[in-house]
Image (cartoon, rainbow, N blue to C red):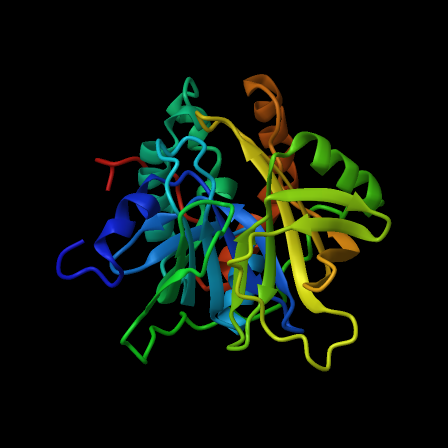
Length: 332
């Protein structure tokens, strides 16, 4: 980007090289929900996207723009660098769906080339249900940094001097689509699988300023009510005075390969008590995982397309726009 950076310059390689970051937004009740997302450096913002056909995490940010991105997963990034939590104000962009799709095709093919390697363009052109995107542009408000996931010592803190933030595009009319994947029937079964198979674990709470704060978990373990979480001593917990059952919280497990061809995650909502370090699960949330080898990932994409394709036109109509086309650089 041109002009001065809106964050410390030594953080730009951390942001630009990350394959995934943990993106946290807030539900209508103020509880955090955190999912892995691929981050992109925008024009003074850190941007993530979600599919037009599954817009929930964008709509949460439109309703409450306080969000957080945690950069703590070094896999595929080529760095073992610092842990950085970016709390920011989100602006949702869906006023130009064709421009959004063009951008996503361009930047995702450049950043994640192995995800579509070998697929002919004729196949990709039929995947508008996936490439039609809503962008969430995040302007950093506060950045916390530690040397690594152990969170030893107090974080270094950078605070933006700005006090005004871009606003989201107007919300579409009509009724938003329902969840497209059911939640797991048993949180305990999902928890055992996550502990056995998904090596990265992160915890999200809400701080005193109403922002979600995502921090890495050093060692999670099963507990009869959920998980016991070992978190580094430098984690800045908000006060629990007056709270009898801890903090609204979210725990997310995830994994992906060095060369990104798919990913897998499990997310749990509940309450966290910093005193005994127990996260008590209320429920497991539904999510989108594409695990396994390329053939299994391709099969998962086909199944997802069958479920999501019927939503594409309805979501475009809600925004009074045509269905975007999948176009490649040089075609527009």
